[in-house]
Each structure stands twice: as structure tokens, then as C-alpha cells.
Length: 351
Ligand SMILES: [Zn+2]
Ligand SMILES: [Zn+2]
Image (cartoon, rainbow, N blue to C red):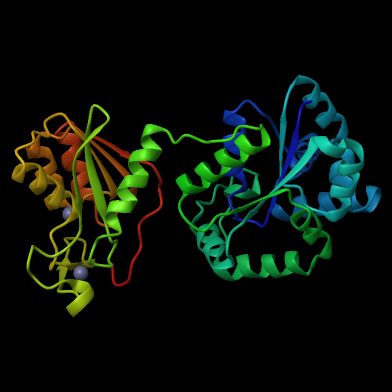
């Protein structure tokens, strides 16, 4: 029996990341709201947000609050003949009732919940794209996002599908944790008992664990050095051995003024995670030539220089570092492969 998964969640909750994981597993994708865009295109209307709102209202005037279920039914049935289906953006209680009556056990609701402040932050960071009429690519100010939210929360119709969700994903960490949690749910839906992490997920998880030993809360970075899928060394941010830690006596700040006039603040009390891992390898006489280093965020310029000279050839980072342009330039020139898994910038106080 082919399954029909419908994703529900507020704006900015991460629905598209969840949908993408289903698509990677061969699910046929459709967006509930696509019919709005198709209609606008077909009628040659101006594809802005107010037109979209008008079209949505006209659909609901004609078909009731279940309009997007009714109008998508033929398409969903067609897709279900071909395989499993994933629908992004289930919106109302009325839609849910219509779909549940029609598809019964085939329908599985997956809700994505993200705390409001995180969503506002993400929504306001989205890059606006005027030519793209899909709302997901528009950016809002935090105030606009909040007011959208309130109008949605007031809508009792919206609560229905979330309350009836078969699976709930809490998305309050990084994108790769969201992806991993989604994979686990897909496996549960498909009756698989265990989700084995990929090599990359395994090394990144270890990197996070190592970072928990860090003693400077500005990033609390960790890293591991890998060769042939084996761990050669680990490191986390902290003061040199025997010296007092930031967590005990506070940071030791230096502010740096750049050519463009901007100033960045750095804590100089610590040896960085990458430096500590390289030192650990040196202490134990282990060559890290040709190895890969997994880091919590992009290395600073000092770490970048040490990485280059230690013979490491690949750098994998979970997130971006706010002051990493010099490192990126050096890696490029030194022919070091830099991979950043998540485009978000790691944030902490007084950057
Ligand atoms: Zn510190
Ligand atoms: Zn560093």
C-alpha cells in the first residue's frame, strides 16, 4: 500500500528540509499551495503576495476551508498510483478531514515544530528573491513574521492537522539533526527498526560530543581528525594544560579592527579545538598527512594555517564562522577542500 505523507508546520519551521528527505527516498512530491501559483500563471496575474492571498480566498469561498484538499485530490490519486507521496503545506482542519476520509490509513501526518524565536530568526535571514513567486524564498522582518504568526495562530483551522499528527519533529537544533530525525521517522513509517548514521553523520556527532568538553562558551568547539574512516586525534577549545579556564575566570578579549572598519571580538585565552587536535597527534607521533578534519565551524585563520601545514587535505565544518573569509581564501590557494554542511553562521555573544 502506497503511503501519503502530509507535512504540517508554521512558516519557517523547516517543512521543506523534511520534505526533501522524503524525496531522497523516492517519494513523489507536491506542494498543496502549487495550485495557487499555477492559477496565477494561467491567468497571467501579477505573482505577488497579495494576489496569492486573493486567489487562496477565492478558492476557499468556492470550496470551503477544505479547498486545497479538494482541488489537489485528483493529483494526489494520480501520484499514489506511481508510489509513495509527500505533500508539503497541509494547512487546515477541513483539509485534513477530507483527506482522512478519502485516504484513511494511507494518510500519515508529520508535524514540524520550531520554537517561534528560532523561526523568526530564520525567516528574517532568508534571501529575498523577487522573481521567485514561492513564498518560501521571501524574507520578512521579525515584526512581519510575528504578525503573520499571530494571524495563523488565531486561525483555529490551522490547529487541527498539528493536533492530529502521527509524528512530531521538534526542530530546535541544526539542519543535519533535523535531517537525521526525519530519516528516523521515515524508517519508522517504512517499518525499519534502526537508522544507522552515515559516516558523515557519525563523525559530525562525534565532533559535537568532543566539543562538549570545551571550556570557552564562545562556540564550545570540538573537532576530530580522520583518515581512512579512522579517528587519529580529537581536540576541543580550552586553555593550555594547567592554566585557568574561561568558564572559571571569564574570557580574555581582544578586539580586532579590520581594513573595512569593522571590529570583531575574540577570546584569546584558549587553544582552539583544531590546534589541540593537531598537538595531540604531534604528542603521540601520529602523522595526519592526507587526513580530513571535522570541525564545529569554519576554522579561524591561525587554525587554517596550521591545518594547511600539518598536511590535512580536507576540512568539513558543520556551520560557518563569522570571521572566516581569510581562512576560506587560504584553503582555496592551498588546494584544501573546504565543505560547510550548514550555511548558518555559528552565533554567540559579542562577535
Ligand atoms: Zn573564552
Ligand atoms: Zn582557531
